[in-house]
Length: 334
Image (cartoon, one colour):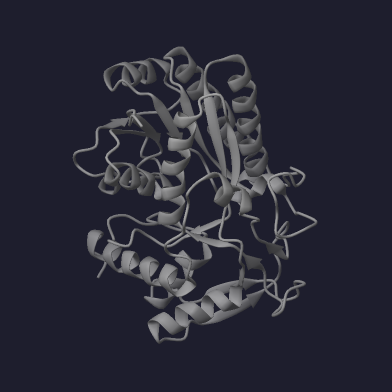
């Protein structure tokens, strides 16, 4: 199967930088576009071309598509903080929906054949049944989830009208870092639980807030499906191979392990790995947090030869911790 040149949008960010490594490790020609508002130049290997700019810039995109002979796009660029999307919805509809429209239009104009989209389990809102299948009702409860669902809809309509196929991958809770510590979650003030917990374990935070202890779960704290970011990146490469193999077919698939851990179980894992007890502060629920959000991942396993390598909570924590230590060195904090 031919390895077409791939443009990774948001390739200097958390998940995008792991996708760049997965593509590069597998021999694909890779190019990155990132405006570096939340991404980091150090996350991109030196030999990977980086265009610093915005996916809304049609002139720049046309130049990249031509210069790099791009045949596929992996689209990670966007804003991802749910509470911020509630406070500033227009930012999310601009960054996640309007800019995606500009990117899709430029891809169609350039004759790009394949498009992989970083979507989210937030498209389901608060599901009535967990595990959640891809056919569960899509009822986002915040602008973040809706902005992503709107992009999925644009891709579906575009694929019907143009010679482009796509794969929308709906992520559950992404965590961990590259096992070789080449990249990881680097955003200051990140809200991901495992990131927050390893920061606390290393003394970068005084405590970890536990939001809600009265959920309908075994220990009263919210249960989530945590997927290692490198397993997620591997799924993107396999999805691209599937799109190239069957150009008439588009795909929508959940990305998770199909198992859940509660907030307290995650914090126990961090305590185990570090041999140190993190201080926990019990706080009230946040609006819109479901009791449990676990993926039904049978479709991705049936469709792609995807075999997770890091589906172990302690391993996810170990890799997150190793990256957090390296980040301290990179930033000269320690």
